[in-house]
Amino acid sequence: MVIDTVEKTGSITAHNVRKEFVDAKGETVIALNNVNADIVPGEFICLIGPSGCGKSTFLRLIAGLIKPTEGEIYLDGEKITKPGYERGLVFQDPTLFPWLNIHDNIAFGLKARHIYNEKKKEVKEFIDLVNLDGFEKALPHHLSGGMAQRAGLARALVNHPKVLLLDEPFGALDAFTRMNMQDELLRIWKERGTTMIMVTHDVDEAVYLSDRIFVMTPRPAKIETVIKVDISRNEKHGRKRDSVDFLNLRSKILQVLNYTGKETTVEYNI
Ligand SMILES: Nc1ncnc2c1ncn2[C@@H]1O[C@H](COP(=O)(O)OP(=O)(O)OP(=O)(O)O)[C@@H](O)[C@H]1O
Image (cartoon, rainbow, N blue to C red; front, side, top):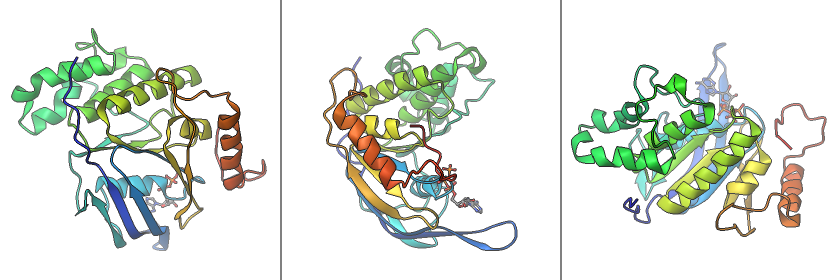
């Protein structure tokens, strides 16, 4: 299968981003403050940090679903002001339309943009890419959790996003399926070169996947520590999960997160 490779675009720059919300009691909640980030095209970034610190808020700002109270976020130097197909979104729940079969779910964005007829062939290519060949006619409720999430990935990828924003995409999957999906995602990432920005609560997942890990502080969140993951990836199976380097880095991250075993706001799988 040949899918056009995406040119080397997909940089994200955040400059002094602050995001405030007004909660149900009318009080101002500062979710993010002074967030700065430089993500280069094709990088794989994981965001980790205490529960409720603002990780999803940061993703939603990059997606253009909400606007910063202060500061700016840029995609390839262009200020993000609204959602766009060049930024794909994948959530924990793949949110497939239950009445549409897998082919039509994946084709939905292309149809909405009136480019389905010219891109029809690509729907099949992306179905193959996520290993759902033969399931085109299946309805979402016929698929396992992992298969539904693969359909969700294909639905985002068929739009050729420069950046894929993933909010705990494998959080609802069992450990075995999750590990398979991590490998699937790495394979797609290597093949497509898409910039990946992923929120996860799983330290192992962050070490397994990332080029760099952004550790966020408790609310109001900013990116406190950036950890470069200098562990080589095996061509076929990603990083070795039980190597000394892997385990050392995982401990270091837990230290950075101040994991003491008593801290109730940190929800990490260790
Ligand atoms: N629309 C909103 N209105 C009011 N407060 C909000 C809104 N969205 C988010 N918040 C608040 O902003 C803070 C950050 O939320 P966010 O969902 O980004 O955190 P998170 O780090 O992704 O959390 P988790 O790890 O639990 O998913 C939380 O205190 C949340 O309650």
